[in-house]
Image (tube, rainbow, N blue to C red; front, side, top):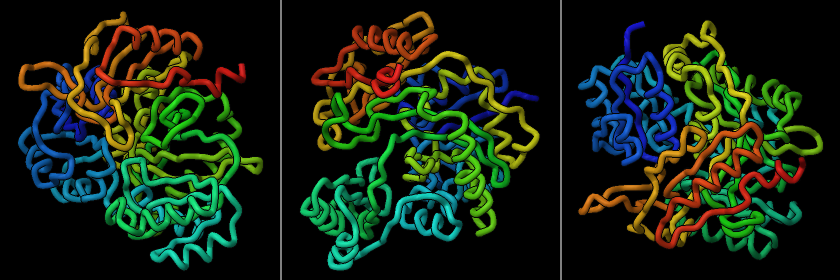
Length: 427
């Protein structure tokens, strides 16, 4: 196969991990990232086009005669980037705006689950506090309150009391998340451990693409506010092969078939957030892209070439594609976050040590970085760096990652010291 011109859309740690892996492919000719970040600049050309500038991105894809566009963030899918690329005849790894509703509208997904008999929590969708309160009367604490639309991983409240639940409903409907909170989804609380399962899809076929376990709370011991993710590891011991097979059979396959039957075939990554309950895996939520920071651990563990898989999915040819091959090692990712994250992260903090070389077992991905006027690397977002490592065991991977983290500094930054604790406490 001839070398490919590839456009990668996005600027975070997920996209740096994708760029790092794509650049290793013998098929990768020219790799351009828009808008990218200082870490991605080491392996790709950067172009200053925003992820929601659909016209600009389509024009850029045409300019570089892109053979493949890989979409990182969900916000680009929501505004229809994949749809416009399809009109331009450019293969895109990423779903249409209609298919991406599996992430961009929690109400759509819950209704879809109900239509297709998929295992998930009981729920209600509301636009006014009075109706929401009537539904809350039927549930027991704790309560799960979600903004319907995209809220950067922050639109979910686990309310320990009814008063907290009522306050969360009023907060969301009152505009805290803008239009994303115009509707709220209220769910029964599911008991169990959470894990994430990934599939690569081409609209008809799905291929298993690993699993991971995330840490959503900001502080050690799963304390503090929910975040977009403070760290992750793969593979998660709790997600056994039997549970993966059950989730695949009861959730992933019916979802791909159901979306096709409803006229919006699903292309790209299907990320199933699972609750492993006493009665089996149930869907917490779907995401329409690689998880962040789950993607980082998957890219470290993926031994085979990523590019043929992405291209086959974009072209609807997954059925004949080679399956991914995984390393035996465990991978871990620890997030170094800015002071004040997730509510009010402080940007501009000086970063030192991010370009350290660790001899291959540890890798640093840039998640929220930029260069200041003097060319110094500074924080530009809440999650700033992803310090990742491979190890023969999760213990070893963790030790390598935290040793690397000890050589990196961010003014006012913080990280969790217990990433992987669930799995490590079981062994």
